[in-house]
Image 1 (tube, rainbow, N blue to C red):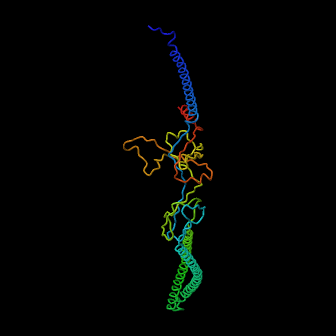
Image 2: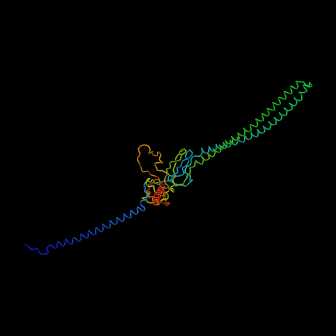
Length: 384
């Protein structure tokens, strides 16, 4: 039997013993790192939670938003052939700048016709006024004739009265008295006829004066036609109602255009805004004047500042061509969206990069109205 030297196994045991403390130290370091990570995550989660409670939950965001502008459609109010196109596609124009000219000859001919009608009405009025003066002269003549007829009738009546007693006494013949009576009756009838003629001449004055008023009315109508024709002459030159950029130009030289035909549009790029369609569940604290962050997709997410300008008075569905009628058929509840208009607060250099139709993401900070819901609830409780 071979004796084992004392402590023959100690080198292996020593190696194991030396390896065990190393494992313990590694396990402790891992626990420390893990503890630090856990604490960091807890701190980060707490900070996020506090930030969300204090500010994050008041941020309302939507990507259902686009840049808009109140574009002006250029259309003629008169028909005709286009004689000149004075602007190009995508050209910047100022308010009042000429854009298109339509052949003005037809409108000018209508204006000349109206001027001729005015002159004709004036000539007719002058002729009628001359007739009025002639009629007053005829009235004077009729008065004179009436006066003479009455004098003669009175004289003949006196002769009859003077001869009647003489004929009764036999100093004068009855034949002479009869002749005088016939003459007296004729004179009386002539006086009545002269009076009727005078009355007719006087009434004719009113008729002629009504012709003057008719001529004046015709003159006013002709002047109105002239004013309308002059407006049409001016309308043959189409000018820009606002400043902006020309877009969607469809007019060409020599084209015949009807009144109301769309020729081009003018986009006021300096007055662009954002229309954001927020869910109805996001509107409780949204108020005009609240700050907005706008991220433009086309500019690699560049952020712009803005403010809530106004909220639409109804959902988008209410302003559609055929609003939904939930009282008929089966009803499925759908979250509605309300258009919110947002003004853009950007530098001129940034505005030049924006055009209507671009997609944006809008975030509204509603923290300024955080106490409104509580105030409304308190008022409701008091009302009860």
